[in-house]
Image 1 (cartoon, rainbow, N blue to C red):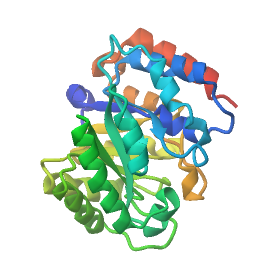
Image 2: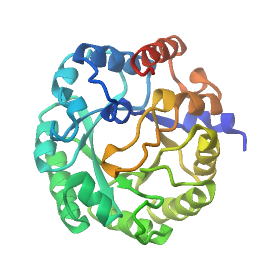
Image 3: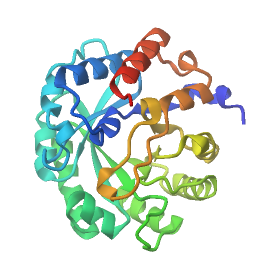
Length: 290
């Protein structure tokens, strides 16, 4: 597969929110603003920049509103995405005009849904309906993360058919954007191919993306498997930082932006600003060290 032949079709969502949420030291607000501004300058399609959840649950992101207020959005074409876990968070996010997407984690694992949002799957579906209505009224869109989309450590039943069934149900509720999330890094090329190959044709009206966590030595083959199966939207994070502390599982980082950009021919070939790209990497190295 010649990946560079299709580089203009690739859309990257940079996920500093996912990188920061489990970081052990609080990153000062002014430094967050500098970092996010640098990422906006790079020209990613979307920036998953923060979340409106309980500060007790995610203390690192308690300053999301303040960070947003400090950003200069006058020259960027990058869309902003914020994570919400309930209608309270959605209402707060909807008050911020620059936010385009509300991201909601919807798990096909009952155990993880309870851990992550303190709700059952059935209750979470009701939340999705309410958040969808709120977002539409505010001129925003909802993106659903299918958490534990490739399996989980809890011994629960999983299959591509189960995931497809839930995505179809969400599509019936008007959801147009889905990201299949490998929350704890259990995906492999075989189940990635099986899932994307079945899902993408099943919901042609839905934009389907990949939010994969991976050890570095297997990230390239995972991205390749998703691309070859029709996926063109990828969530990434500089330096491969990330992981979900709600999973009570060894944290497995996001797929590193650097690896994906290199795989598809470098920053210029996927419409990223090379000079700003270099500056963003340098700033990431200074923040996420040790």
